[in-house]
Image (tube, rainbow, N blue to C red):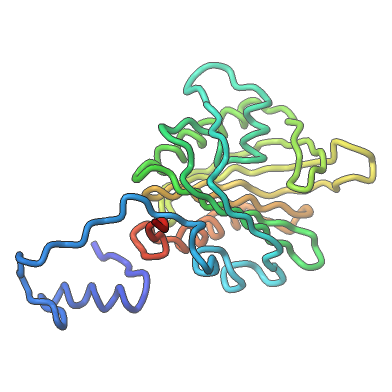
Length: 255
């Protein structure tokens, strides 16, 4: 099976390995130990986050980055594997999906970016959360199990948008996929929960992808027809592909 390389540099390295030689590196030299992997690698500690965030070439035309925040993550919300699900857990899934699963340790680092579309008012929010090594796939699966239960719940969930606007959220069909990692998406619809002139009806999706120790989420909402179900896999795959868990972008924390 062929393996796709992520960049021209990685393609060159792979070609060198295939031919059995690399410039300046003796083949089969067991006297040169491999450098140890860093114990802690961080996303948000990068001086320039552009390489790991969705950019103009990844987003639909007219979208622009309006804000991003970095930090040490947020409190982790315990999600029971079985038993009834309530609207409060579904609310947290909509508002802060990166916190809606139980993990052995809290997120190590995180960046959340907000993108807006000129004209339509559609909004896309991306998050990258660094968890324990090789735990993100399991966490994504546990959050996905919660999403499925929110779909089955089939009720409107009171929640808030990032600007505090109250909305009523419905969880619709869920789909699983593999794109840059293992993940899933769930279709959403929202309506204003406040005054009649509040938030207009919107639709979109929430996607969560886990790869290595990086959990990637994308929540994309807009006026009816502005965001299509087919956008979910495309945007989630592009967001996950921006971060290589083995790349130097996830560098050791400053000592």
